[in-house]
Amino acid sequence: MIMNIIVCAKDVVDASEMKIDTSTNKPIIEGIPRKISDIDKNAIEEAIRIKEKHNGKITVITVGQPDSKERIKELLAMGADEGILIPYPEKYDYHIVSKLLTEAIKKINEYDIIICGEASTDLFSGQMGPKIAGLLNIPQITYAFNLNVENDKIIGERNMGENSVTTESTYPVLVTVTKEINEPRLPSLMEILGSANKPIHEWKADSLLTETNTKVDTIDIKGVSMERKNIIFEDSIDDSVSKLVDSLAKDGVLG
Image (cartoon, rainbow, N blue to C red):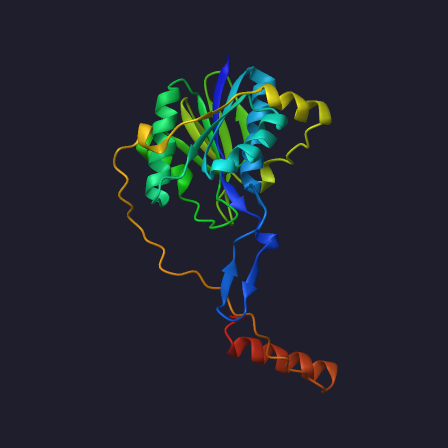
């Protein structure tokens, strides 16, 4: 069986480079380097492994900034076959982005597996994959940390917190993967150079979606205060440990 795989990847700010403006307590986003969300690279890696076993084609879809093509090139160098960039419309939220991705997938038409990261590393809502599956009315396997892809079905082991659940589905199916599923490869110099010959198409948002009414407005973004109490216990070790435990229990850290 030849697999047609679609991977939804998000272009995000590099959170490790983010700083907080102490005067306003707001994150400084301007000028921060951008990258493909880490868990979406796990999604690409898993798609490549499936392709290596079953043959097929990998298409990457990104709703992002006009310069997101530069980040898509990295995924093409890893092993994806083509990219599709949908520049953000003037106003957007999860509702609009999920519908844009869904309409792009419908336009591609031929697909067996859609793979997403379980969540993006900037907002980590975990809702994009399930929303797309719902809009397409196809089965979904979420939080997969192991996949076994067969000709007529896919079997996923899912991280459900304290338990794991094994789920299987026929095709087409949407899968969200966790970071534990694999270790994304680093492309070689030849693969990076070769990716320049792979196509990246740009589809305008208004060619896919006429209704662009957002459902959620972001009112404000603020940093989280991380002030320390700096409490020092100077008693014996046993007494200090006992006081520390009592203090943590009062603060609700310990049950």
